[in-house]
Each structure stands twice: as C-alpha cells, then as structure tokens.
Length: 356
Image 1 (cartoon, one colour):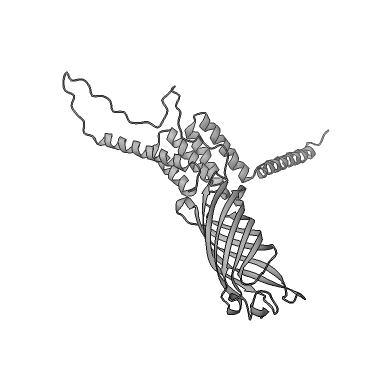
Image 2: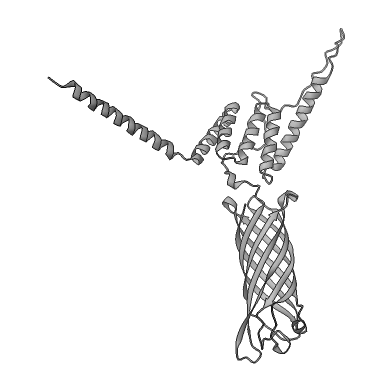
C-alpha cells in the first residue's frame, strides 16, 4: 500500500519550486527590457499606427514614449496625429510645445507655416459660427456653400503636402536641440610676430585655449558670447647667445561669435574678442626689452582678436572646431614698448567641445 501522505508534500514542493522558477523568469524578462528599449518600442508602434491611419492609437503610443524619454520630436509626432484627426486646437498646442523644446529644429519654418494655417482655419470656423442665419428668398437660387479650408486629405484623393512626415528615428532628451551652453578645448600652432625696432624672430609656437560660451536666444541661437582663456610659451635665446630662456603669454578674452548652420551638423561663421594677455618670464639679457633689462613682473597687454570658425556637430552634444584666429596685443611697459610696440599672433585652433 502506497503512502499517499508522503507524496502530497512532495507534489506541493514541486509546484512551489515551479512557481518560483517561473516567477524568476518573468522577473528576469521584465528586467532585461530597459526603459530606453521600452520607450523605443512605444515609439515604433506609434509610427506604425500613424502610417496605417490609426491616428488616435498612435497618440497613445507617442505619449507613453514621451513619459519614458521626453524627446521634443515626440511632441511633433503627437501634433501631427491630432492634425490628421482634425483636432486643430490640440495640434496647435503640441506644435507650440515642440518649438519651445526644440527652438533650433530643422523643420521650424514648416511647422510655423502649419501653425499659421491651423490658426487661420480656426478663425474662419469661428466667424462662420457667429454669422446670423439668413432667410432664403423664394425663387432665389441657393447661396453658394462656404467652404472652409481643411487640413485633412479628402478620402481617395492623393494629396501632396510640404508638411514633414512623422519622424521615424527616436531622439533622446539628451539630444535636444535647445542646448545653449558650450565648453571647448583647443590646441593650435601659433605664428608670432613683433612690431619692433629690433630684428627679432620667433619659432612657431603651440598655444592652448579653453572656451566657454552661451547662445543668446536671438537670431535663432546663432549669436554666442563667452570667455576664452589662452596660454602659450615663447622660448628665446639671450642677447649674448650664451643661454636660453622661456617667456609665456597668458590671459583672458571676452568673445562674441556668429554661426550660420549650413546643414544640421555643419555651422560656419566668425567672431571678435577683446581682453588682456600678460607677457611673463622676461629675464635678464632677453632680446625683447631695452638693453635686455628684466621685467619686474608680468606685463599686461590689451588685446584684440578676430577670427573665423567652423563647427561640425557629432552625436549627443559633442562637436569639433577649426578656428583660425588673429590676435594683436599692444605693449604697456616703458622698457618693453620702446623696443617692441606690439605682439601679433596667428593661431590655428583645432579643438573639440560639448554643448549642454
């Protein structure tokens, strides 16, 4: 006779272990899908629903994706879906939010035109509702129907529109185009010249530069103001040719630059700068001061700068820069200015930066 009581705990134990394993698998599966992957899945479903004409359902998917990753392009897609449904006020609302979040959007002109058309259509509909009813005279032909421009394509009629389609590539919030602050670092070969009564030659130097800037909310964020810190070292041979020394240029420049976007990644422009650069390290027997007298300290030199600039934007806010800059510094020390009245530099800055 088989002991049924001994099999019952064993069966329960097996059921319990099976449930634990199943629960672990479900938990592992849930953890395997990251929020970014979930947001991308909602985005892709929204695009498919939009392309199939299920605009109301696509709005729900785009909203779920936005809740996970508030990328501005999702607001544009939601506006597109509302427009297709004829919900003009909601479409206007989301178009405005899109441009607020992405002020430098490539399709800004098209979106603004679409907003203008929607606003005009809503105004015409309002005027029609406010018109008093008119009596139809007996025997008179019926009045011509008033047509309100519709932003929706007529059924069965192909329509060519300049409105950009739903964007089919998700953009993360970190890649928002509303980045205003930027920081960059540069290295540059530097050619130095002197306005001097002496015959002074200098080798090609290498200078370094750190830059911080802010895009002003004017001219579509194309005007940037900032502060540059510059430094370079100038070696020299003593007047008596018996020893060598090294001097340095370092200082700060306030800058203003204008950049014009040639395409979404490349911008070109130029800028101006002004500030003070100090000339330090002029020891005894140097070739720059009168009779090689050592300078008592760093010599401040008012400096002006003019240059060109080309920026190429990479992903996630990173960019690279090529910026030839011409600097002129006027000397202020009596012992130096009577010998060297100005220092001229031509730097070819090559660097990289990050906008945030």
